[in-house]
Amino acid sequence: GNIGREERVRAVIDKARDKNIPIRIGVNAGSLEKELQRKYGEPTPEAMVESAMRHVDILDRLNFQNFKLSLKASDIFMTVAAYRQIASQIEQPLHLGITEAGGLRSGTVKSAVGLGILLMEGIGDTIRISLAADPVEEVKVGWDLLKSLRLRSKGINFVACPSCSRQNFDVINTMNELENRLEDISVPMDVAIIGCVVNGPGEAKIAEMGLT
Image (cartoon, rainbow, N blue to C red; front, side, top):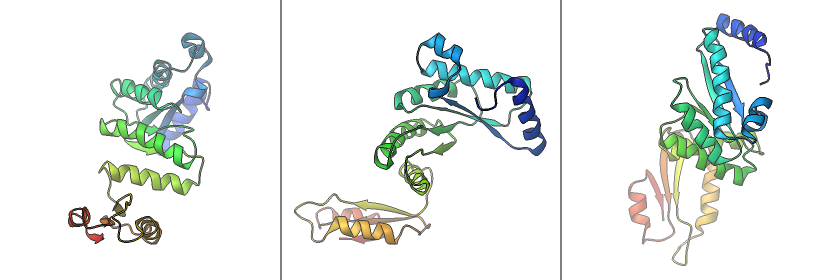
């Protein structure tokens, strides 16, 4: 990792213990220990878990339990498998993320799929959305992910149709304009934007505000 030898880890732990500061053990599939690379041949969930447990053992020897773990890869399947394995072995909090996920659109999809699977299974305590984009977008995606899983409530939850030949107004532009205008609202609220009366009344019925 970034710290290196165990004596350096001890020095960090001493300071963290003195200040009551938690630390994170972060395992990345792209920077596994050389002996693990030789043992497994390539990054695998098992290699990531073994790397994490090596560091957990060091903290156990130092009698330091104020830590969390992350096991990140850019591959969704590898990340999910690694977190599932480690979740059955430790009780410490897990920090979830798909590392180097990509740009705004592709990275959002990867993160939503990978983190969504784990969070639905009750795995994970904190999250990080990693995008090659404005960090503000990472926060927005993170909030939207938590809202969609009903783990957190903040701001507007839009229910909007994809538009079709029945629409009575420009749904897409209306949706974009309202999303921009209302993005600073933090009060949880459902807003339905439905283009016709076929689905509109039913969708708007469960929302605080409906437009159809």
